[in-house]
Length: 134
Image 1 (tube, rainbow, N blue to C red):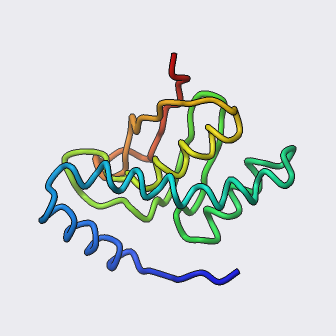
Image 2 (cartoon, rainbow, N blue to C red; image 1 turned 135 degrees about the vertical axis):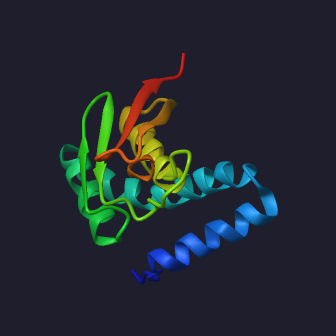
């Protein structure tokens, strides 16, 4: 399989371009983009279900989305998200989409994923809470 590499600077510049055209609506687009990107990672992880999150972590690190990630039942803790940039709100929208897709495939149910802490806001790590959708 062939992959394209994109630098953090390029990713940030693309985000700024979308934001200049679409304002806050761009964050929803980034999230949906992440869901699409998460589909391939989930497909790879599903091949060895007992190692699902181990494979997902390996893929996220190798693809440069994170430096480290810890998956738990109710939350995900991320160090070194490529989407981190100083701001007034959490900035890891694509990563949130990827993670949500992973949990939906793993649990076989719809989930709601929120970024409760973000390095962009000065936190030590990005922390995402996972909740089932009733």
